[in-house]
Image (cartoon, rainbow over all chains, first blue to last red):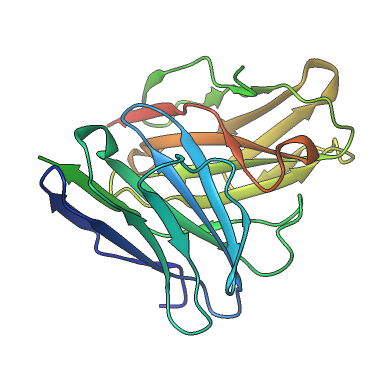
Length: 116
Length: 115
């Protein structure tokens, strides 16, 4: 499967725990984007990363959320001290080149986070 | 302000009917791109089409067609002879310089095709 891979597909956490969401981009893609989908809402942009660099984090909440895309391995979206409002589907997308306007972002299957 | 508006929240049709999903966008840029994605019940997002602001030709791909009209800032999606497998949530999205790297998504239209 050469598509964008995300794991886990479903994640249950209790309030105050940490959530780690992983994303492996499509083969040959070096640009990763994270989006959040709240119930009955469209997707909202969170962050755009290239290897070892955060390029645009304008959509990231200021606290508790962080993202990385190391030189080796998947991109990680980390949510510390989760609250019920963090319950959502988190989608990762990747693109082949520069992240310009024309770039098509290909999405993974998403991680459904449920905070109890 | 919502940059992409999909006014139809839910549509229900009977198999073999044609159905059009509306998308209206708002941008100050002269160069921008529009996208449609499909989210079937399994939850993944599937890319359907990309269109740039300088190309107003309509596009047809099998039973799918897209009508882009800059004069009305619309990028509508028509499914001809709908099938049960078309049941999904369909999202329209806008990529513009003003928004940086983000795709701006509409809230989606949930399409239900019944036998």
